Length: 114
Image (cartoon, rainbow, N blue to C red; front, side):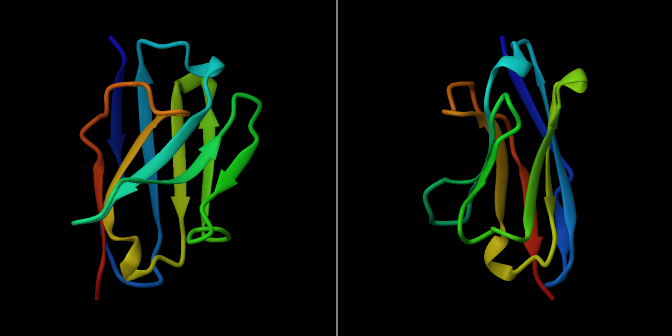
């Protein structure tokens, strides 16, 4: 049974930064592309960043230049470094495979507010 455990969220002021982590257990992590997704209140879940098994990265236009996705295959962990955060980045952030075929984890709440 694959488990995804996200962490690192919190309350941050506009312009601040956070680093999210996601530990993946029970899968061939290094073989899969991975992504970070987010869901804001009243909105559909959207994909914000992806990283392939060969470390190719891609970003949604709304986060390009501010978010950086990375992975550590030795730790079965994928990261999302977020800088210059904006109130519109407020959401629950999830990681999953690309496409998202694992059961979703609990996510981690990111709130950007002054």
